[in-house]
Amino acid sequence: MYLREKLIKWIKIKNVVLAALAIFNLIFSVSWEIYLVIRYWGDFDTVIHAKATPEFVFWIIVGPIILIHVVLSKEKLGNAYFYSGYFEGDLDGFVSFEELADVMGLTVKKITGELNFLMKTYMKNFKCTEKGAELASKTITCECLSCAARIEKKMYFTGECPYCGSSDLRAKVVTGDRFYSISNELKGKPMGYEYYTAKNLKSRKALFAILMGLSMFVIAIMLMMGLEAIGNFGNEQYYHDLILNPDKHMQSRELITYDLIETVITTFFVAGGLVPVLINRIKRLNYVGMADRSAWFFTKCDKPFVDTKMIPAYRNKGEKKKINLIRQSMRKGYLRNCTLEKHKGILEVALGKKIVKDRCPFCAGAITGAVDKDYVCRYCGNTIMDVIVKK
Image (cartoon, rainbow, N blue to C red; front, side, top):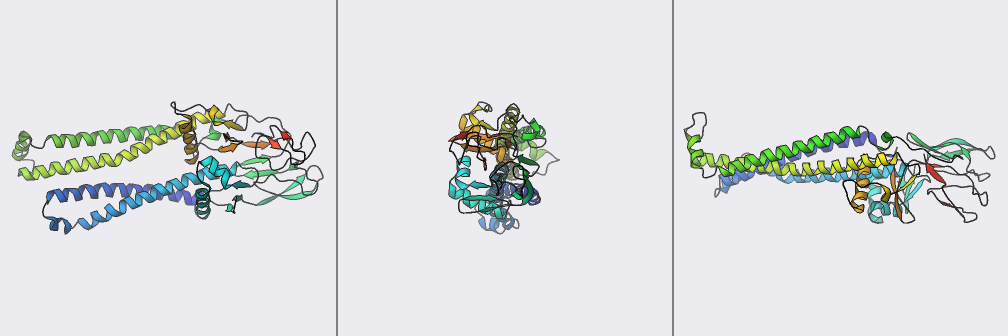
């Protein structure tokens, strides 16, 4: 609801294409430029005026710039997914920058700047004010069950009847394919595994494992080829066999040496270029694994707020790393329909929420704008427990 889905799909494709193009040309250009320098050592005029040198220099300069752009774009996309999920879980139509700063572990200034940027690019249906993000105000008609008044009700806002003050409204507060209704139900019920995970999460987990294994295999092959070439430097038998081999066009020791240098440079640069890809696959596996474990845990929960300390750790990670994995799995879209929230200094994962109490049991005052499981009555000041339960 808060994401520009079509634009994001195009940006994802653009990032993949640009990253592949930049990595390939950067590895190719750097390795060949180094080869030219070694091949014509002392004759730099030839290196500078070589036909391929301008293209190599172009990619050596532009390649890293493109990769930085892709990394920053992916970072912003991840944050857009996180903020979107947080907004969808909100019940009062306003999210303060301080609240988001606590959850994200960032400064208010950075949160403000990022949301102002995302509002104009990857996200929609909210606007930034001085204190926070005001969510979309599209309205629907509803009916007050206390006085039968017909009123307009904001999506993303719990609201109350402007005539009698009751929050017992026959209406749905819609957020995409979910809704929050005000009712007198007592308990929620656990949702299924697929409710909390991205589509085909298990398939993605298998794919990331395959890609990680493939990256390790190619890196190992490249390193072995490079080490073999290094071992052939000064190997008289190797030079002798190549010079006398009629199928080879190596007519001198100098050409054979340059060919070995080219092999070493190319294989080591290819291996080095794949190392970041391997690291990324390992990180993705951790994010997917954390999402998988968290989703199974959430299916057993019948409360709308889960203390992060209660969520099982992934691969014996510490508490800080576990929270970061949860946050990243949400940012990547692997863990859905839940958000990180901070209530009374405790960091919790908020699952699908629904308001289930409409009046204060102490003074009968209307409960409005509840966003936490415990609500302080604005009329009598008493704390009302379990105002919100899991959807």
